[in-house]
Length: 282
Image (cartoon, rainbow, N blue to C red; front, side):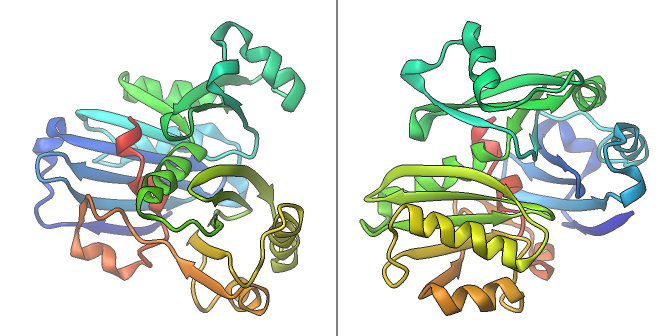
């Protein structure tokens, strides 16, 4: 089911060999964007919702690829974000490719149907290690042999640290929400301090995890800036509740390095930042 589709009038399906394709796959569904790399402009954004009966059915992703005219094309480059709760960050001096399973054995359980992947996050001098379902990898590699895979933490952390060169020395918290989980990072004095993912079912779950991180890291609510992105708006009950505890909740903005089609204006600008921030990581 198509949730939304925004196509710029300059989008030319015959020019995809000069375009970049970013895809995000999760239990919420599939969303993709197309970047015109010549003009540095995002010209397409499209989302398919995943119904409950198709959850964890990777044939669903294949069926979307086979029927979407843009996903049937070839691109200059392709990157896919897999949204999953399981991951671990390893400092670069400790990271060794041949010892990856040592880290996963300690920090997470890898299912028989999952493959372990890893990405470098240069701006924090660390690696993220995470599993991806093997069937999902097979489905997308079949269509896009040149595809690169990423954990959602990579564009999230990379972009927030990029902005720190002009940031403040006060602590800053960043939260990005998906349908049933969210990721959270803390930066203090322009130094990366914390990243984790948490599942949630209600606003109370969200508040518990967020306020617990504030408490554990001794972050003063009156002097800590909180930046939100993803599935949240000013009308959300979470936003209203956060204002009771934290003085300055705000919404993240898209990277000004890129241009964006006016057709995207129908959505909150903070709603798909990981997807729109993936290209510099590819």
